[in-house]
Image (tube, rainbow, N blue to C red; front, side, top):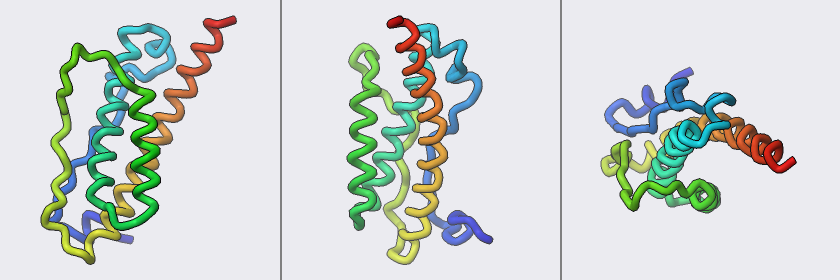
Length: 136
């Protein structure tokens, strides 16, 4: 079975880096404010990047719903950053995408977003359990 990259070798898409151990998204680090901000910043950068990428695939109702969901998540993850809006990931390059390439690229993008969302859900559910424990 071939991947989307093999189907469209001349098209370049930059995806956000994966969440790694050094991003401090582990349970011990999430309980500490400076460490958890590093993790949440990485999540926010990923969501911004997927939002930009999905905006390029604006030909279906599915992506409009995903864009709305990403906007909602971004609103929840607003992080004080001193007013600077720096982007660490370059935007996706999709200007040269031909019509026949859009479906495999969109599927690949959604697959990557799903994987990212699983990690984010685990991190946020652990953060929620920390908040509930501190209220008791």
